[in-house]
Amino acid sequence: MDYADLSGALTSKGKADPDRSGDHIIFYIEVKGRMYRATKISHNARGQIDVNTLGLIARQMRLTSHELRDFVGCTLKRRDWLRLWLRRPPLRRAVQ
Image 1 (cartoon, rainbow, N blue to C red):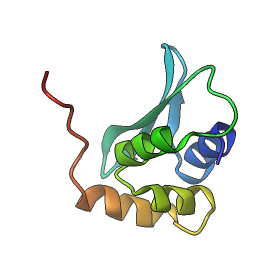
Image 2 (image 1 turned 90 degrees about the horizontal axis):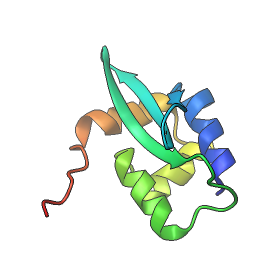
Image 3 (image 1 turned 135 degrees about the vertical axis):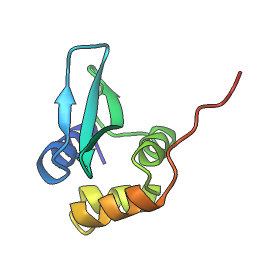
């Protein structure tokens, strides 16, 4: 999967709103009237997404890597993603 495929799926299928004003493109989604940051991608990200980054993006979106591939490949629908989003806890940052 490449960054263009992911970005396209997020905006068209996921109905995510991209904010391009900062260092990264941040994709926001609305779930039950609240706005959430689904994930972020660097402005200069091009080509294939490496396995580690794919896993990080999937966790930010509250998906497994396999589910993320299904989302981009159109076998996981937006409503199914949002059901998973509501059932799974948000990604927690490590305390340093």
